[in-house]
Each structure stands twice: as structure tokens, then as C-alpha cells.
Length: 303
Image 1 (tube, helix red, strand yellow):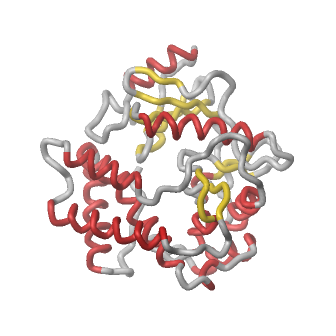
Image 2 (image 1 turned 45 degrees about the vertical axis):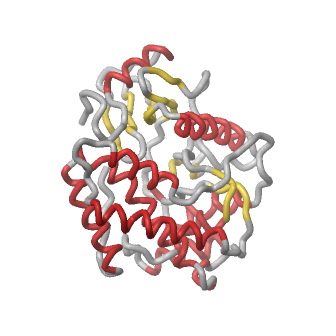
């Protein structure tokens, strides 16, 4: 699967991929699109390298720079937690794209819930790194996606749905700012789930996709243990929380982070909907389930 050009999703496509590869001397022949949500992620099979492409905006440049700095710093810790990027100057910025390059490590066999808990526990035990890291800004990506959609000739989100999303988002952000978090604040991954684990040559599970890393409540990384619209089996959630050593469900305010995270996830589908019909269907399904409060509705990841 390949993108012929920059889509209305705002994500760069193959022309940008070829240009950033030319700059670093990588071979994009037979590149394969792995998935397309917040980033367009390509595999370069001749290099065993993964390229992550985002639109060239000041926010995306900062995220990419932080992602590279954090993963290189974490790779130097006594117990590795993160997969570092390939050597060289990164990120690469060209033709409207911000690109980062990463080693390709297949994820087989699939990680267990306990496998995810181990690097998170190590991460949360660390002090803040010796360089600036952004603070967590709840629902920033949703606000960005809504702004993008309003600029389209034919917006994906209907006016009443947009008004509801923005009102709900502002309410949740306001509640977040007055909430106390039992685990305190520190360096967090902020998108911790099993799809973001790879296994290194020594058999250790490492976290990838650090675009959202920030200083924030450590509970943000424990959302795998919370019941949500993906209906993860309770036994898997319990294994994860047991391995981590803290049951977030004992904290009465846990639904706040669930609601923020579910609303945050809408942003990627707003971006994708015009160019991917399955994403459009999933977007409207998710908005409908949120507006009606239907917790039985099952969500599906579209990439």
C-alpha cells in the first residue's frame, strides 16, 4: 500500500519519503506503508529501517526533536527502555515533512500485558532528563485536527458534532487542571500500549513511538489497565496492573483519563477520514458512541 502524494489527511506521502531518503542516503525502493494515523509510517525493506513522516509544523518539529533526544538518552540508561533512532542527524525536514528514521524490529511473538508493564515501571522510576521536555497538554492533537478539518472545503465533522467535541474537550481539560494524581508527575511515554513494543536482539521489550513523550501524570501510561471502548479482557488488564504494581482502578478519578484518551483518539480519524473511507466510518461510529454514552460500543483501530 502506498500514498501517491500528500493526502487531505495532512500526512506526507511517497514524494516526501523519497526526498528525505535522498537526503540521508537511504533506499526507498519497494517502500511499504505500515500504518497511517498521526504519522505516515513506512518500512524500507532494503534498509530494515522504518521512516515516520509527519507534516512540517512547529509542533511536529518539536515533537520529533524531543522524540529523538529522549530515545537516545533512554538507550544509554543501565536498563534500556526505548529503541533509539538510527545514527545521524535527525529529524530530517524537507518538502513539507518532518521525518525520523528507526531500526525495524519485528514484534514476534506478540508481547503480553506484563511485557508492557516492565519498561513503564523502569521509565517512571527515572528522574527527568537533563534537557527540556514539554509538559503534557491534554487534547492538543484533537484541537489541531478540528482546526485542520474546519479549513477543508468539505469538513468531515458536522457542525453539531464539532461543537460537542470542542465543548466536551474544554470541559475535560478544565477538570484535568484541578485534579491531583496519586503517582505524581514525571517522564511519561503517553501512548503506552502493546503495539508500541518491539523486542531487541537480547530479548528485551523496548518502547517505540515516543512522539507524545512529556512530563505529566504517570497514570497516563497505565491506561491499558482501564476498561475502554476496545474491551480488552479483564484478565489481561489485571495482569498488566499486577506487573506494574499499582491498580489505577482504585483511584476514583480514573474515568477522567479514560475520557481524555478516547477523545484524543478522535483526532487521528478526523485527519484520515477524507482519504480513507474505513476511517470515516470509524470516526462517526466513535463520535456517536461518545455522544450517546454507549460504553458497549466496540471501537476498532484503522491504520
